[in-house]
Length: 514
Image (cartoon, rainbow, N blue to C red):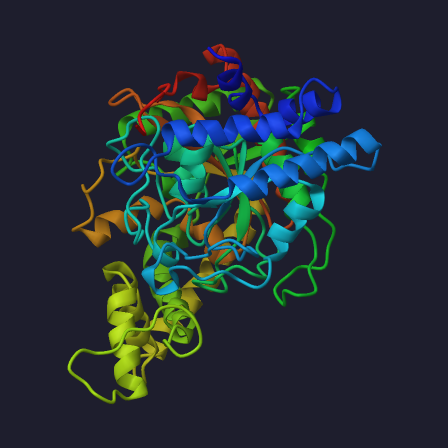
């Protein structure tokens, strides 16, 4: 294994420690990851295709600045100089932000999302923007207008979605850290199928300013990493109140890094863990359930008390989500009208087209099939005569789901389930069956509807196909630190069992992009 390969396989915490000890430089780290991207990322036709845009010049300039700060003895953030990738739904000054859509092809924002600004202020070089399902609508990253991302464990399989690009970049050792967004599981489900760690923070715990919204009441920015500690480091950096975001919670971020370090000791004495009855059993792959139950045994061995908890309204979560989300998406995407920015297409055979004709032609050419499907669903559900029957009813069921969470957290400290019902399916396998695709979000959606935080970490490889399965932990709102304590304890126990991280088993991929 070359020195560069060894560098890209190190965790973000290890890289930060190496920088602090003077063992390496940010320029060396950044260049090693850029070289890795060149070697394995490729395009939609060859390689992982995790990135839509790589900013080598900007990343190296930021790395040089980091090294200069360190040499001058200036105050540094713990992650200063450690490279990061950013999902292409977050506004980034000077870099294209396309949301995986042709309708925003080439658009370069004049401002940074707050989370991007916090990355830059802390000195993290941004490697580039990662691929995603168009406007975050999908569970496989096959709905990107720029071609699918591939799972590093098997390039013929999906990396999850909508944030498959960020998860694949981390799993393929192209980036030690990444940002994703989670509307119904778009950080956690890709984490499960790629063997990475993904966190959806409490709604409002991380700023949404500069996030191109799909569904305002559901979207949340969060970290994608290879370890629980790395996720805690990145979460603490991007979290906290933002006056630019009206949904931001004006409370301090709990001690996430401290909780992760405490959990890594392996002591969960006094903790009550609730296994959600409705999120296991029928429809779940046998190998996924086997790894889940093995993980429960490890939590018990760490001192936790594991009990069954019923959340009866969760059986309606999928239907509720697929009413609430399209309604909000329909409203949000109305601004892409060909008049202000983005793509503009003139209708053929019309000498003096009206604004409506230009808008129709632009949206027809610029939006993909899945986006059109959800806009139509949302517009219909919000239309006169159907609003109360569909959207209103969905919001009432959403309240019941929140009450189920409240009742459950009155009995236990955290709730757990498999993250996704199955491992990664093959590319193209479910493209013609939207309902089958939607079922991948079965276990992750309730957290978004209630605004509670969740983490997914790898629980092992399923027996049927040797692909990663995920273990999900959910906590009460603003108790994100519980995720990190439980996650780190389970991660430490699993690493002891496996003899190292699960990603040590991922295929090398050298040269696949060539």
